[in-house]
Length: 322
Image 1: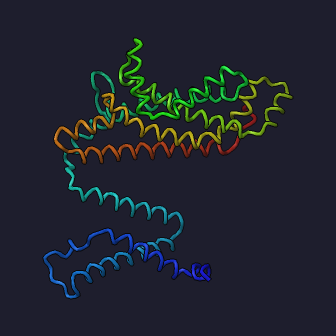
Image 2: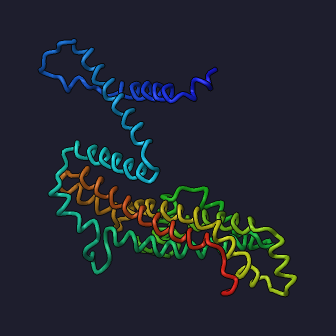
Image 3: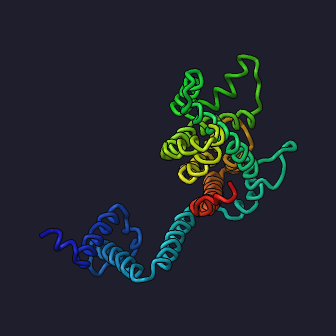
């Protein structure tokens, strides 16, 4: 009985209307009618406004669903982006201040002869991505080896860096290493911490991707006379890479955002610059929103390149070039 009712479009739309209306109860619309006379009464007018808004949202949803899928995607993005920007507009931000400080946040300049802002964030992430990829592959192979020492080192490394907060790892490297005579500047310390942390996470991704390849692949290659190194390089990894890329790309995007923790060391990366300029003239909201939008743009760029790489490797392996 219930399923028969649920299959009716009108029933689903009515339920959607009720849910939207209930969600709008948390919004106070009485301020819209301050200083005005009410023909229907204040409470009735507010509830009528809430009902009309809920009906408009439901109608908008119904109209969008009648469009082709691709157009639905674009229209939904456009509407959500408009609401997102309107939400920021309601903060009464100083756009002139944002515009004058934007070059500093983007890193159009040098600080003591080195990068700053977004440029420094990207530099740290690129170096950390390269280092963590190498670490992950080595740790994954050690994790799969029959050598007890290699297995012990890799499992200890993975367990520690996956089991402790990144901010703690950054502080241990930056503050702890000087206790044994190793003094690092904030940027090298941050790169080491990011590389070690995400190398541990990615090692498990690499291990799972390698183990997902059927054992018969390696056995067949071994029967053909290939050595273990050749089997891994020519047979296993080319197939595993298609399984490894999607979660690895997500780790890189997470690394980009987690690089904001480096601000605690005083490195002049994006978040530090946003906090610095925000405190200078009590424009914290302007700088935080600007930094958030920059991180968002960078993340979408990485998502775009990740999708292109996935499509490239998803086409299969050209055996003629092996």
